[in-house]
Amino acid sequence: MAGRPVTGVELVLEVDDLDEEHARVTSAGWPLAEELADRPWGLRDFRLLDPSGYYWRITGRAPHPQ
Image (cartoon, rainbow, N blue to C red; front, side, top):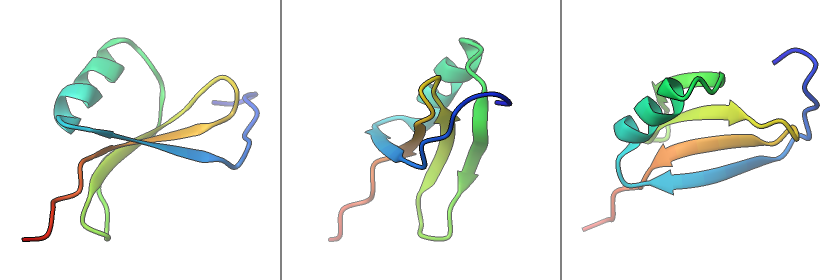
């Protein structure tokens, strides 16, 4: 990621199957800014930094309260 501009903006994309999306992104060779991880707020996600300097947080859909 060296040499890429960072805007300080993070965009969030919710997906139905996070593990499948992670596999698709990594098999395409896209460099990750942060690996897939369980977050303290109860969701799992991983992060990318695109060529324009935007962070993308790819996350699973939040569980709906019952």
